[in-house]
Image (cartoon, rainbow, N blue to C red):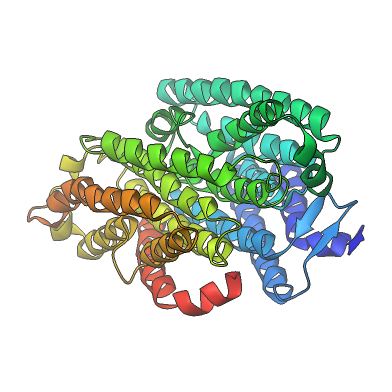
Length: 463
């Protein structure tokens, strides 16, 4: 079913309208009224979630000349992205309140969210590139939002690597179009079947390079710890969460559809990348004392686990549902861990959290729940996500990959405990400076457990 149906893209339209209206209102509202733009963004996300829920069971369709696909993958990405935006706006309230560019902060977040959703729903390489750019450029600006030395350096590193791999991605699209004779996924599925394998390999690897940069996978992962440490805590939370959602789904859709008949075992390629990514992320996190760099390397390892589900594409019925479930659990849990960091901006190292239990016991409990959630401890959402992803990989005959992932999961307990230990010991501890971030941490800790307990119905929906 192919048509030009704007009504099918209402969540994307809400994000775009909120960004445009917010930008215009921000030019006229006084500084103490800029919070209205944030409220507009939350309202747009709430409306998008309602529309997504109402249209969840509708038949899958392609719109606008078969260039955009609306199915469970797209709807799942919409839901995760919209929830992520709401949480990110909540934990950044105290950080950007009264800022001269408070409205622009919200607008940039909304535009990055729009690009992320477009990446996930793209059914054409040209639209995929457009989504990639829309999901990238606002984040470059957000990383340097503080206009200080570390933020400017982080933004420059992020931009330069993004520009390099963005150009690489465009070169790959050109090669794939030349040998496949099309840019839409349906046409490529037939065109790549008869194309030279060497040319297919070069073109597709170049395309995947851009997407792997967005998710922070090896070898395009170097920017993640530098950006997480250099930018503001709320932006670090957003950058280590939001773009990964759309990029993982985009890789999944590419491997599942146009590349399935190319004659190359692309799921095996993804499995190798997943292995190297989760292992390097864990090894690098072992001796990190800076909490933001620790969470950044944790993010890299989580990407490796997510790619385990992508490697099962086409060989397991659980693949799509498990990836979406994991993305939801990871987004809530990772944002919650960063919310604790946002609440305690002066606590830069794991040792600075000494005695948090004494001053803020519930915040310490939230930190423990969220960090153990990132490990994959039952009954949290990441545990159910990992369990279903590993099950999908076993169904796909990738037992070796599951063994590597389980070993890495066990090893990751070490560096999370290095942070948990000081936080639960006695003492005065650091004082929270952001009530909004503290409340977000408490809410996400509870949500992580609730989502884990509701994994059965959620998996049924995403499958």
